Length: 154
Image (cartoon, rainbow, N blue to C red; front, top):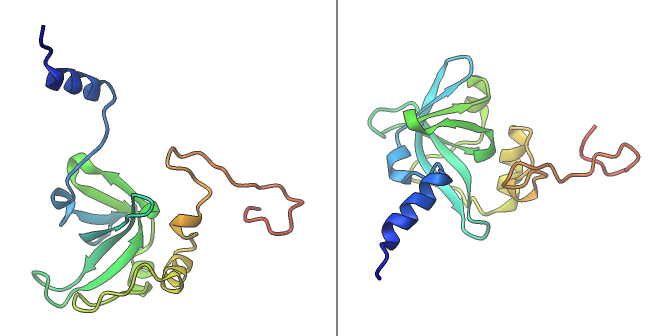
């Protein structure tokens, strides 16, 4: 007797729903902060193929129809998403975003360069994503003992 593997896969998928979207469907999504300010729009996503995760969201600010805008790479961990509404929320003030390292559409930085990444993450008071204490499941794995001289938590 033949089984319908497609329907079995569909029923297994619906039992454990994942928020999976095509990147192309999220490009152009509005980016707001929690104060309700419009910060720009999603221009692109930067992937780290070694870890298989999104490293940065590139936010376009200003310009018209993609001309004259400035691009701001923002660490993915700073975003809250409402993908069903195609909205991204960034927990920063608008001026912090505008003061962040930016680049022109025709001159992308080497986002794999650790010195560049250190400058960017320091601006947002973040650790680089590859040096995080948080697992993909959201579990904290760091050591916050107060007696440790090189502690990263207080």
